[in-house]
Structures are given as structure tokens and as C-alpha cells.
Image 1 (cartoon, protein in one colour):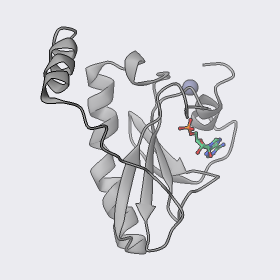
Image 2 (tube, helix red, strand yellow):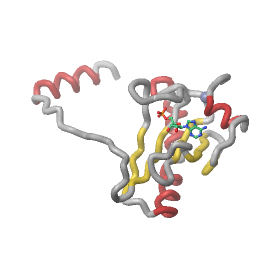
Image 3 (cartoon, protein in one colour):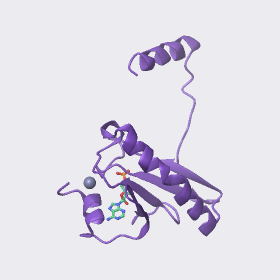
Image 4 (cartoon, helix red, strand yellow):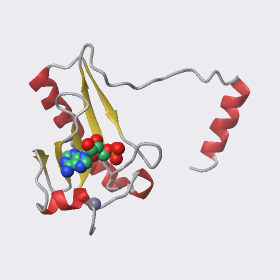
Length: 135
Ligand code: AMP
Ligand code: ZN
């Protein structure tokens, strides 16, 4: 896709710190890493976001992740790993689908905040039904 920065990386028009490549997937270091080893995994096919992705492309993209995650773990011995994928607002800035592998270290500054919205059981049932109705 013209004007896509990640397609330009795939084409070799823009340099990258390549970690892994196969027929379907390319993985490289994020140039603004949140932590040491922060890696992006992208499908070679230009897919905008998760809503633009078919099951086969998803399977092929995710298939590469355990191998890359394990290599990062062996390289740097992080305490954990967050796998993050931003779709549209508020955080997606590159519109070629990518998965962030963010190794975690004691006292790093990366933040993900989980909190309990405290829904009632009726609300949970209603939410469940609405999602199922759209599968
Ligand atoms: P997102 O906010 O999920 O769209 O993340 C896009 C990510 O792409 C950011 O973390 C950027 O640092 C990263 N990024 C942008 N351009 C490049 C590049 N040329 N090489 C490596 N990473 C990049
Ligand atoms: Zn692209």
C-alpha cells in the first residue's frame, strides 16, 4: 500500500531492525521502544486493523508470536510480556496491523491499567447477549 510506512519497511524502502521473517510475517524492533526488546509483528499483507483481518491472516500472523516471544525472553530474561494491539482510537497511529510485544522488567515505566467497572450480573448478561447476537 502506497504511503504505508510498514509496507515501505517490507519493500526495503525504509530500514528496520529485522528480527524474524517468514512467508507471511515480518517482525522488527519498535524504534520508540517502551522497554528493551519492544518488537512489532506485522502481516506482510496490508491489513489496516483487526476488523480488516480475515481468519487465515490472523492465524498466520499469530503463529509467529510464541517463537519471537520466547527469543525475547531468552535474550533479556524479562519478568513478563505484554502483547498489545491498538485498533483505531485512542492509540493506533500506524494503519498497517501490528502487534506490540512489550517485555516487562522490574520498575519499568510501561503502564496498562486494568480496573473493575463493577457491572451487575444483569448488565453482564445483557452485554454477553449483545455480543453473541453479532457473532
Ligand atoms: P500504534 O500506536 O499501535 O499504531 O504503534 C505504532 C508503533 O510503530 C509506534 O510504537 C512507533 O514507535 C512504531 N514505529 C513507527 N515507525 C516505525 C519505524 N519506521 N520502525 C519501527 N517502528 C516504528
Ligand atoms: Zn501497509
